[in-house]
Amino acid sequence: MGTFAEYSASSGALLPGFGLSLGELLKDGDMTECETGGEGLFRAGADGVLHVLTPRDRKADFIVYRDKTLCYVKSAMGHPAIYPLPEADFQGPAEAVLMDLDGTSVHSEAFWIWIIERSMGLLMENYSFRLEPEDEPHVSGHSVSEHLQYCIGKYCPERSVEEARRHYFAVTEYEMKEILRGRGKEGAFTPAPGLKEFLLELKSRGIRIGLVTSGLYEKAWPEVLSAFRTLKLGDPLELYDAVITAGQALRKGQAGTLGELAPKPHPWLYAEAARVGLGLGPESRRRIIGIEDSSAGVLSIRLAGYAAFGIGGGNIAASGAQPLVKKQFGSLTEMLPAILGAGG
Image 1 (cartoon, rainbow, N blue to C red):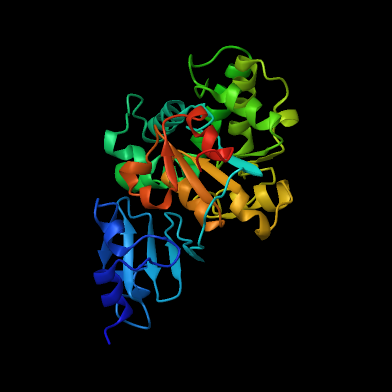
Image 2: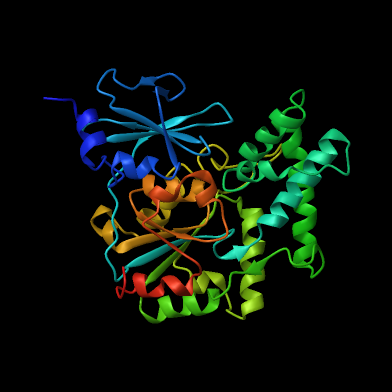
């Protein structure tokens, strides 16, 4: 009798956690099969490992065994982690919807990339500094420190992430105050098309809503307020049933939280939104759907044990995260029938 690896490759057997066959994962180039993974910790064909897979952006490795798949989340900050990839399915109607902020609820990625450019320009004393197009997947969806560490590694390896953070938070503090005063960069925060209709429809159906962002509170909250003011939706804390951010920034002279080492793609923000924020346990997982536009966010949802809907405009396709998405949509309102149980 052949090995499970031979069987799965030849017969279309579904790999644990993915719910897809090896052929389906590899056919569009979203995933690549590797000899080793987890920065050398795992090897295909050894110690029960059947396959080692990595997505196009190589931000994580999937270690496939006969009965489970582990996900090795890499870290630019030197603190990787290993999580099981749970089976995840969604059966509407939803009991709760967990949704991302940047790119999903509010279009602001261009603004935050501009902030990174300004911060790196100050760090390098090159005030005309601009990122290159290929940098975009590495400066969106993850934590501030991950974004800055990537830029330092490419553009000024002699500098430190701590220096870059000081510039970043000084620029961010100034720009956030300007925006809250009605000044600042024009068009920084634009509500996603259909956001108001989407939120109000969910509320009218009694579906609970959690807002989840890897952004620190000081940068995320002005975005939410700006969007709600534009849409005349009132107090965000009255509409959302839970709002989970990456917490407070750690700077000299003040306390911070664990926001820089445990954001998306780690599962903790989405897990906290559902389990602590909404009080929903594992028995509710099939009635919870997460919505994301980024690969880091999709992986975060899946590692937390929930199914994910993708929305266009982000880096899901470019990063190779498409196999982790239950279904892709062009807009929030387009996915309402699936959430309400009419097409999901």
